[in-house]
Length: 286
Image (cartoon, rainbow, N blue to C red):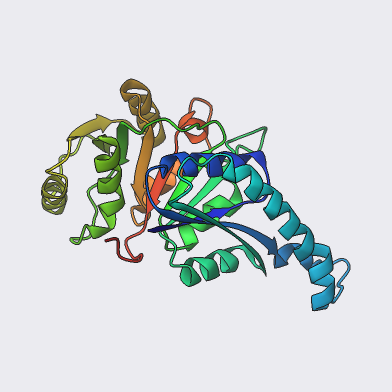
């Protein structure tokens, strides 16, 4: 039984992520926890410092949130076709956003956080919403991010950008194995070289570890040369019809350039392709 956390702010982006999650785990037994956080940072204002008691918070924030969650749950239940094995629960928290996420992740032993994000827009060129960016960098839990335009399709082609900087224990990659097995997918491991340099000894060893780890599943290595990692990823996504991008949070070089750069003129994967961020230190997967 997997435990899935679905943070919601009641927006269409968060609804899109919920719908994706239910389809993605359609054939698995899951507990889905739909969470809304009344953020303390929104309750505290420097202009007008007002001390609220618990009754005020209950009346102004918690009761309306619970009503919205009940309505959302009614909408969610109409989506699932796996009524016997899909359980849905609602949670409301009054906390700072990341603290609230961490609290629920620990209490409910969450396996995956699945959340939506809105892509770059206007002059701000925001790649990820601040909440999403904070979750994938500050919460040690595997997170599947669903961009605004992403609709569920069977993830047959999965890209895994890597610079071969990995720990020797690859057990944290088990979620990728599960996806490969469930959907009969093919894994495309992508190494992007800026300067046409060969792999060093450590990189070669890690490449061999990856070969051994995925040796029972279809995979291939791809070597690209491009000064801009995000441009190389965009070209690869388009040429291979990639359905999902997987990354390791520890791998900051790739991670930051793929997700957090600001030049987005020709980059569409942020708004179209789900990406799975894996953390090395999470609960064990059986």
